[in-house]
Image 1 (cartoon, rainbow, N blue to C red):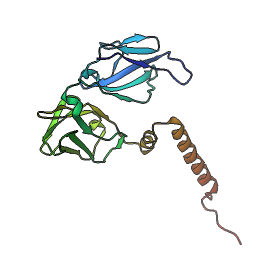
Image 2: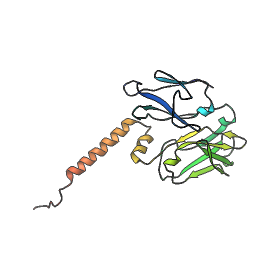
Image 3: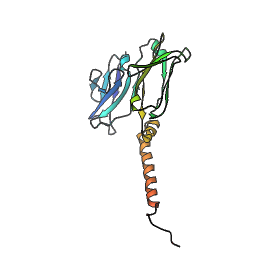
Image 4: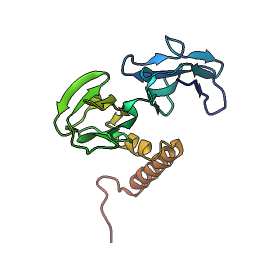
Length: 206
C-alpha cells in the first residue's frame, strides 16, 4: 500500500500532449485520473496502491505514439507473494506455442492450477502447466494463475507480435536506436541489390 509515481516525457524532455495509460485485469486502456491516479504536471501519482493496480503501464501522445510498456505488480503481502507465473518476458511471434508454468517457491511445480486471462478463467490444468498453441493477437493480455490453498500469482503481461522486425526490436531491450540501425542496414542492402541488378533484356557482349 505504497505511493507509486510515474513520470512521462518525450525525446525533447517535454511532457506536453502525453498521458499515462494502463491495462489491468479489470479495465483496459484507461488514463491517469480516470478512476485511478492523480495527474501532476509530467507525473501521475497512485496513492494507496492495491493488487488491482497490477498491470501494464505506458505513455501515449495525442498522435497515438506510445512508449515502452512497463509491468507493475502490487503484492498483498500474503501467500500470493510465494506464487510465481513463469511466462515469456519478451514479445512472442504469432503462430508460436507459449507455455505458462504456475508454481510456488516452496513446493514442486506439478500442482493443479487454474489459469486466468484478463481476470477470466481460461482452464484448469492438473500439473500446473498450460500451453497456448499457435498464439494470435487475441491471446495478448494479462495472465495470472492460482493454486488452491496457496493463493494467486502476480499478473504478467504477454505481448504477441506478427512483425519479425518489431519482435527483433523489442527483443533487443526495446532500444529504438537498434531499430534505426536495422532499418538502415536493410535499406543499404536493398539499394545495393537494385544498383547491381542488370536491366531486363541486357546481354553480355564479348
